[in-house]
Amino acid sequence: MRASRVTLSQLMHPEHANLLGNVHGGWIMKLVDEAGALASMRHAQRKVVTVAIDSMVFRQPIRIGDLITADNQHGVVTRITTRYAVLRSLAGVEAIIPNDALVTTTVLNHSYTDKQVRVAVRLQVAYGTQIEPVQALLAEIALRQPRVLREPGPTAHLVNFADNGIEIELGFWIADPEQGTQNIRSDVSVEIVREFHARGIEIPFPQREVRVIQGGASR
Image (cartoon, rainbow, N blue to C red):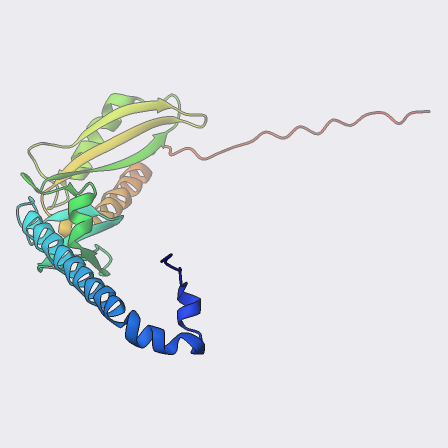
């Protein structure tokens, strides 16, 4: 006897209701059981993967209090759980970073072996300014701030001959980046402006020369 094929749409037709209930009932139930077993297997696999990820996270060099950059977020780690880590930015905003992001992406730990970070301030002085005295003055200004480390000490370097002046970068180190870097950069910059003004050191600004050419009227 030649076997006939019955499609799923045909089985759903009222004419085949008895066929679905009697002939293929056991086959349908078997498919349901297999689908349920497959779903359970996938759930178990996801659970195994989650456990593996969590265990890997706790082997990573990340601790509460570390200053890190992860998943395009930058801040201090304030909490670590089995599912996520809490990152508090220097602006006070908290980000929830999933553990898989800490495992599958590059994490920059700015305080892994040492919490010291370098902060830089760039400025320009007018052409014709004596550079060496300015460099010494900048280092002295940085050391006036209690948060600036004496070792390694601040340094000032000539980095560029710009269009409007000579560009100098003042670099200094701090040991408490979790307290913020923009505030210490601002404090040093304000002191630089004050000292330069008192000593007559010019900070150049963009200047443009405009020439107006007047032509004679044509006849």
